Length: 110
Length: 114
Image (cartoon, rainbow over all chains, first blue to last red):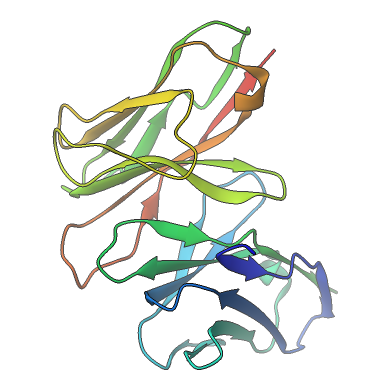
C-alpha cells in the first residue's frame, strides 16, 4: 500500500459545480499536510496547508480527519481555470521528507 | 526574488553520459530537495539536504549523487545516465523554521536519456 494515496481521476465536472477529492495516508505520524496544484508540464504550486482540522481559502476548503487518516479538498463554484492535477503531500513529525500522492486530475467543463 | 531556478530546462543525453542539474534558490532556505516525476508515479524524493554541506538519501537515490557546497545551490549529478532516468526533475526548497513547512518548487528539468 502506498503511503499517500489519491484517486487519479479524471473528475469531469461542469462549471459551477462543487467537487471534492480525498487523499488517504497510512503513516499515523504524519502531522502536516499539503494540497498542491500542478498544471500540465509545470511545477507544483502550493494551494493549501493543513495542520489541524482544516483550512479554508475562498472557494477551497481542506479538511483533515485524523481518525480515518485522510484529508479532503473541496472546490466550490468550479471554474474552467481550476482544471489541473491536485497533489496531496504528507510530512511526518520530526522528519524532513514529504510523501506525495500521485495526484487527482480535475477537468472543469464549459 | 527569482525564487527557485533550475538549469537546464531541457536536456537529451545518450546512455552512459553524465550531467549535472543545478538548483538555485535566493530565499535563504535551509532545506532543499530533488524529486523526479514520472507518469502515474507522482513525485518521488531522490535526495535532500537540511543545510549547507549536508545531504541525505530519499526514496529513489540509486544512480544519482548530490552536493550542497553553498547554501543557495543544490546539485544533482547523473554519473552514467540510463533510459530509466528519463523523467522530469523538480527541485524544491523550504525554510528551516519548524513552523513553516511549505515547499517551493522550481520549474523543472525535462531529461531524456536515449
